[in-house]
Image (cartoon, rainbow, N blue to C red; front, side):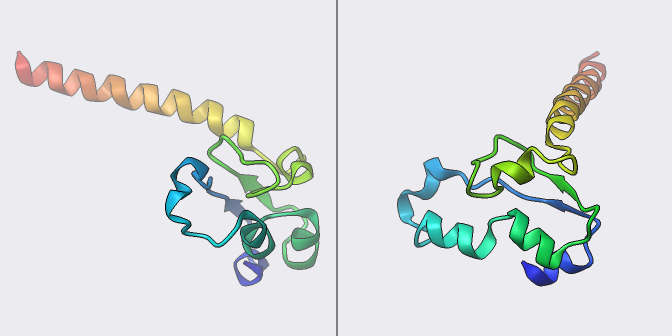
Length: 104
């Protein structure tokens, strides 16, 4: 994580699907947070000061991202989620038009 943060202008932190962890792919959430969680100390030590922080949502707060990072001025998570809905709607509309033309 330190190496990945070193020269990054932006990071896109992915969501752990806790509901699918019945096979224990990670030893514990505490270990995941320690090794991979993005928090103020990790960013202060390894990242650029103006790093853009992304996450597709919903956030497992305190696991993938600490609360202070998720709510920081560098996080564009709410905008990302909002734009993601619009993009998916547009893609579905365009795909439905293609299918409609094929039928005609």
